[in-house]
Image (cartoon, rainbow, N blue to C red; front, top):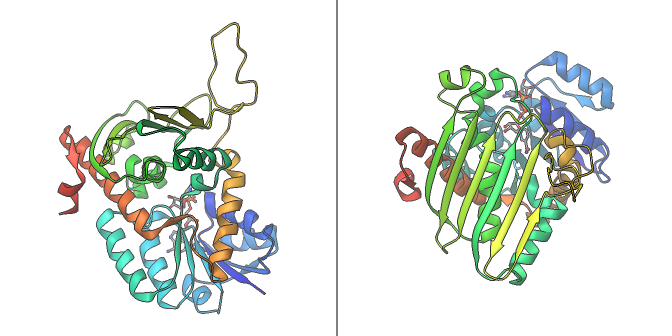
Length: 334
Ligand SMILES: NC(=O)c1ccc[n+]([C@@H]2O[C@H](COP(=O)([O-])OP(=O)(O)OC[C@H]3O[C@@H](n4cnc5c(N)ncnc54)[C@H](O)[C@@H]3O)[C@@H](O)[C@H]2O)c1
């Protein structure tokens, strides 16, 4: 009999509620959020158990907890969970900044309680096959890895205000994939960006469009493209080039591009609408893997140590944009 808790019922939390209620092995789900009206609505819709507060949920004897609250709450909720000995799945990023992520990682290490971080692309069939091809050596040495994340439209501006900006909130997925695929550590980051959409992005010190290059210690170059406005749909692609071969992930029939070649009608499907429809199966697989962690198995997805490294890349990107110059990981770690 496995009882899970879920804290945070916004966009992704409501989506995870649906996934968790359909996941074999989850016998009971307790949910909470800072907004009692939302807790009541979600509890009724999915026939799950509402709880008044995160504190009560974590002290109720749950076997594991999923933290899907807003980013500024991740650090405190994750630390509170591990201090009570509750295995935790925390949505990315692990904390608002890299320094805070590193402090959370220390608290988690002291507790000895397993924590998995929500980088779901690792569980996508195409991304996993690309990783397997690299690991088999099919591509030879990697020279260039391109990772793209373009949302069709930005989330509400209140979300953007607390998100930490496009590098820490959005491009972190790309940074995680670059590290994971290459098996290399980032050395230097160069980022640029612009605002052509809502002027509030500028007010928040953020950008709505970004391009980032990441130099890795094994010689591979990462090229990341991220945008908050992409009219044709949710564009998430990975292109991995080696000395002997190239593989791509995300070039499926729903890739949101219009091909102008009259001799080739690819892609023929409806463009992906957003991360929920593109990664439905990956979200199910990663939460299924977390159930294995709750049962005492190893972490198969991103660990906290992975998330901390990714957070430093995001930190360097933010600093690079500010300075308009390349920034080393060593500099931001100091
Ligand atoms: N893996 C992914 O692809 C992915 C996609 C979207 C969001 N996320 C992450 O999930 C998190 C939530 O994103 P969202 O889009 O659902 O945001 P959201 O703003 O829609 O929802 C956040 C929810 O958290 C609740 N909340 C805030 N602080 C809380 C606290 N201390 N205790 C309980 N509830 C609290 C809010 O009331 C709100 O309902 C973010 O950290 C984001 O980075 C990950």
